[in-house]
Image (tube, rainbow, N blue to C red; front, top):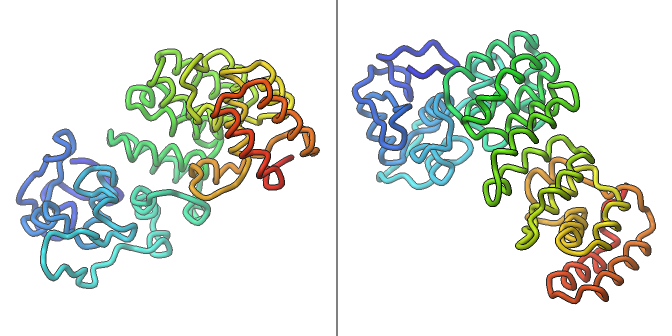
Length: 339
């Protein structure tokens, strides 16, 4: 049976953890089925689990699976689209962070069930010794669940740092196999001595090109390294440059000197530079990682210099995308985050 933060055994329902298992449901994952009593099995299929039942299952399976997905459940485990009449939580609430923090395994359970982890969750681990936390994360990572593996990487990055160096290094190949390079890179950036994590991530990206490379290159974001800018110059597509290339550049310690150079060199690098400049303008709807890392343009505090360079860019390249982006940045120069 898949491991969890509790000493669950195969004959106890994974959801209520009270009644015996009556059925094994593998409708959305045959490799990691749910083992449930009849009552919880019925509620699972009807998307009507009660909060604690959802929490217990999500702690074992993660919440990315269909039956547990955030399309159907709120962050506290309350069903949002139950296919039953008179849905009630019956007072069966999922634990709060404060309640979960009283037990290290339960705290890890809690983290696995969150949409996003931040400072309050990380701070809750301070009551436990780093070695104990590492052992618990190693145990969870062995379960084989990709979602849980990604959570262990995030916790290594934000709670353990160098304490997790050896284990994070050991997980490099598995992260590639399980397509969790992005999560592994966050841990590598924090836990491995530089530039080891960056070099390993770049090596892993050699296996991809085109759309697959575009999707996976975001793993480089965590290193916030100017070396990524050199990588962008080599690997950026010659045409159909998407905005995420600019985001990667903005999050990689981008200086004004490189922006100016790219603007002068023309497309595709000028497009990446313009998209990067727009990332430095805080606004609603930006990617979560942008809000987390809060990038700033380095090496230029004179906004008039930036305006002049953009005006030259528009005069040189009249493509609608170029002109539109230049005008947008010029119109928001006062909001541009500079360092």
